[in-house]
Image (cartoon, rainbow, N blue to C red; front, side, top):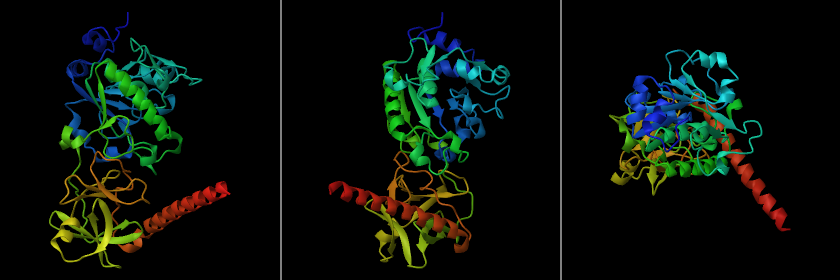
Length: 388
């Protein structure tokens, strides 16, 4: 008989036939990390997780992460290029296994799990108050993290579950995943995910597991947002190895130069002779009034970005864990902590060698702002028309 949640943890772990090393991890771990594939994963140092139990999903093998367990619940996300013998234990479901038995038979796979209503998708995690009593079936959720990875971690008896790379579709624009844009792999709407994650987190709590979102940025808050820097500070990429001095970035349609002094930089707009500074949480270009306060508020540390190791992010030199961030790229930029809500892409800045090279990004920023202005104008027109 398949062990249920009520059976000893040792029996539940033994069910999957993990390798001795992974079995020991799974049996003794009080916490684990589930790695999604949001762009923000680019700022996480995968090499720092060797001593942790790591559960990856879908195409995680295309990144630097080497998970102990790989969860797949969608046949369109079978990574045939990277699934090889000697890799992670694959945990999947019957209907996915039947799509590519030759792939899964060649690697270490467990697939004795049913997928409920995989065809009609009428029964999903939002309508099920608890996980299946023996983890013998999962419920459609349009999210492998919600429908398979979190239930699996809970079944293994993990008390603290931390999710990384869970950015949300809105915050992932224009790239859907850490390795780049793939229009065929769009996720569900953020509001749908929020409700699903609430339900999954509630079910996990029934079995003694707490689910947290340790993603750097993103917009998914149903799993309680926590600071990865407080949990595993060494896993955050801080050291930028490239050259930034005298190069340029684009900030809201302005080409700004990087003025570097030691470990810190100032961001200068030569046309308006302004500097990027924070004030009352907002970030804006302002004239230097030569005060110590202005100097402090316009001084930044430069770090690897949230989407590309060759791009940069900026952390305030006088406001702890305050990064220059935006949610949409057209809204007000603010200084936010890593566990705040923001878009990894629009909080990352590409370095250009000169203003000419930056022009394409300037044009894109202006077009985005134009689209946003048109959207607002159209909304006002509709409101007026509806009130007639």
